Image 1 (cartoon, rainbow, N blue to C red):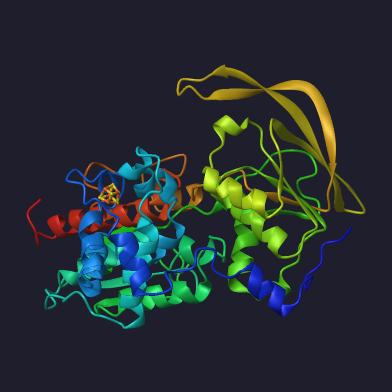
Image 2: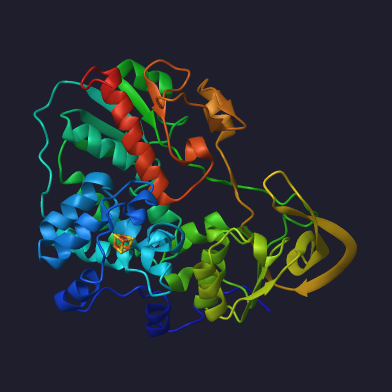
Length: 449
Ligand code: SF4
């Protein structure tokens, strides 16, 4: 057993990481699906979209061949509508709410239709928004992820000059660095950021990290308002013996490397255990398999009933050949010569339901050993507690506290997205960015709110 890179041929890597959701073949195929839509008056699909995209309207526009209008309908609510069409868990959002589910028929493929219009807009660089003339107001945004970009786009449309401070060398945040490459390619992420910036009035300063190159106090001095969209990023520790052994990695870093290096340069073990069952765990497990790991086993401490990932995500992992051990919690990592050889797990059983009705797992006292040479920890992320404390921002265990108007405890400083909620979907961050922009426009007296 060994952790090695370059396990597959160039062709195999290409095939394993190609787009999992291919687009419509042509206009007719898109229109056939668009014409199935019942254009429901109360549109449960729209109500289930965190950004409230007018779904029946954009679908109607596709069916009447008004693709430009359709893209505008999407982007006015969600400027990252193209990326969201690839990464949103639509089975629990818009498509899950489509009335066709009640008729026990296939729901309208809303994400695929959304992708059809938005990708065409990006490919043709359609400028669908006008920027108002500059009003002299300047806003600094920290983080060029979905919340920051969405906030920037709304502000810039209103004539505000926006500067984004981004710690990485590329924009897109979680979309660029934290999602499986077969869902959204690094090239697509770059194109999407470029398309958002093509509105004008938004400058991104890369490799600028809060707490290192820039502080909230500096930004406050130099700008009329500040928006913090810094996300969450620190992987939660397991706090078990042996966690420091060579071969134990965290899923955030593993996926980050996958997104920023060549696939052939990413080392992966023969036998890999992935701890956790959220979206990041699934993305880590499936990609470990697609990098050439012989065996990937997901270890989850609860039952399938309590799984945090969607059924669609679980099915992807199963189809990729990943095994799952339910009711197993990591207890100890064992190794030899400093390298991982075994993961010892406690066998759990479902306990009493908690306040939310979710049953907490209880240790049975029995254990089993899994022979592994690599362990990927995906047991959640913790917020940047030190960073927010260092900048005197009121927080709850690192999660920034905001009022109903997205404002922090510091005057003129607003926040939103994962940094506030601890980590939700990309589409939730986009909505948070819009809310933040509205609050800032009110604060700057550019709108009445
Ligand atoms: Fe169309 Fe389904 Fe939405 Fe109704 S619920 S408007 S059928 S996509």
